[in-house]
Amino acid sequence: MAAFVISVVVNMTTVAAVDTAVKNINTGQGTPAAVTGKIGQPVKDGSFTFVVHSVKCGITTSGGSLPSKPQGEFCAVSVSVTNHGTKAQTFDALEVKGFIAGSKYEADAGASAMANPNTFLTSINPGNAINAIVLIDVPVGKQLDTVELHDSLFSTGTSVSVK
Image (cartoon, rainbow, N blue to C red):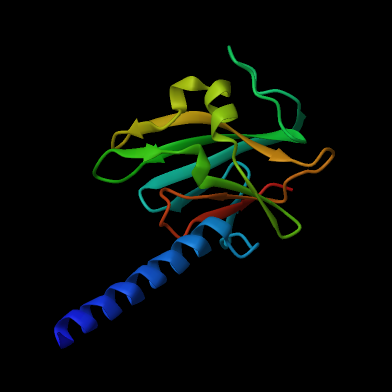
């Protein structure tokens, strides 16, 4: 009986810790990962090397065969992603975040998929690279300060100053 009670307590504690970690990952703290580069410079996170080539805001549609419209307007982040690891890994637009004055903005995965369907959840083999446009929905007239890039949901990430 004592082993059962201990098992239940350990399971409840584990579930609570995982739930808190997932909430922190999903909500963030309103501050991007440490800035390690600027537009045009390679930055690394996990198995990926990223280069943000440009950021253009003020876009009113994703384009593509089924265009998406933003709540405000899209900022298009042009990024190349190279896998410098030893196994294939998937690039997900949702692992790109934008920041404006401490507020975090998520990528619109559906709109990003419409903007470039060949990079939606693309598996990149070691040594290979892709180019992608990631669309982030921001308020009208706003410009991103920083773009945060992750190789996966659980990575620490890296940020690029885009001002």
